[in-house]
Length: 319
Image 1 (cartoon, rainbow, N blue to C red):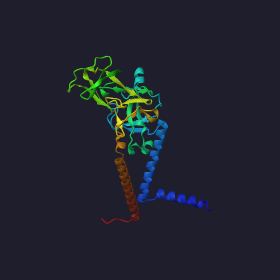
Image 2: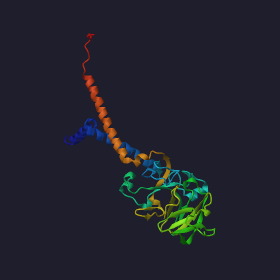
Image 3: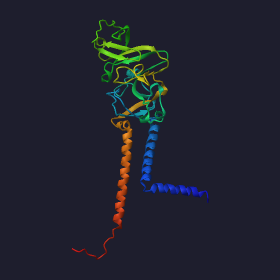
Image 4: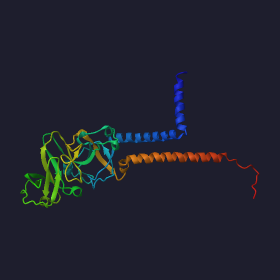
């Protein structure tokens, strides 16, 4: 008999929790329901996509016009639904994704992460992943390529041609020019062209060397490890050696274990909700409290109406 008492107490507690009309218990019940539903959705997404987080939000304009701020991106394991294709591989077979050749990957720069990112709660994390296109793979000990696109996301280059670099600077910039071209001369302070900076130097590609429908590639120091070279479609230069994280630490080629997954498809604007997650949480909680108050008020009104005595048969109202 003693063994049955705890289970009876537990059943009583569960019943009391389910039927209690106290506002705090009712609120806890609503929150628990939301957590269960969200948990089931998250589990389903993980089983389908094979990675976590299975959805991320575009937070910057670096992939415009193919991905915009507020787009909700569905992410799958990098080899799910076909192998991961770099720009170079995809350009050879004509495979395009999100308006250009190659797949778009979600990766953690330099492999950095924290607790919140590791469990997929990216809005709470300070280490947000980067959503950029994978351009090529480079093995350890090979020169690291930098891809330059003067037209950014407005035009897809038919090819990337190699650049040479001047040995001296002009107005603080190293001059770039195609390897098969004559080095630039007589560059003035108001010269037109494409200027950009890396962690260690500044570079300038004069307009006279910019050819329609062509991109450019510049090789730098040998890589210490193998990895993917990535680029934002709307950025002039690829990430590695150009973008910085963690107090100006330059991004290194992306190792495979740093890749969260590849982008499968996007839903416009829906990602604005997680971008403003705290306001969303406040609005949801306030809405739940107001709904609970309204439901109780309606129930109380119904009980009062039920207590009103019906008129006796045969009775007549005075006119």
